[in-house]
Image (cartoon, rainbow, N blue to C red; front, side, top):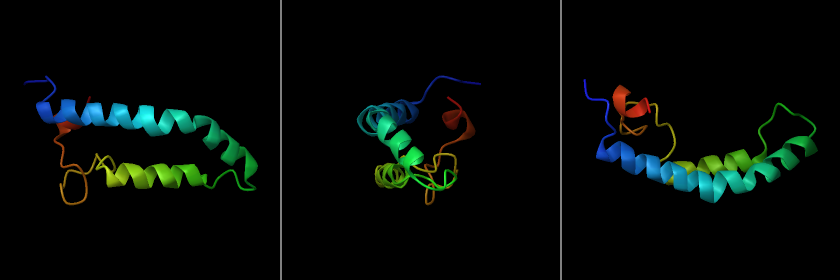
Length: 81
């Protein structure tokens, strides 16, 4: 079985790394601030909803769903890395 990253997986990995660098890591402090500033710690801070929307718009959401209509349509081998 071939476990090398496919071109599709390599491209997706690059997109995810860029998204993390551009959106997620810079907002870690804001996440903590919003989490600590809300009355109910079990509610997601607004920044999580904002980042989810951005990830969804870039096709980086629900990568685990095999159906390309609702997820990325990745195979098990592509999703594993």
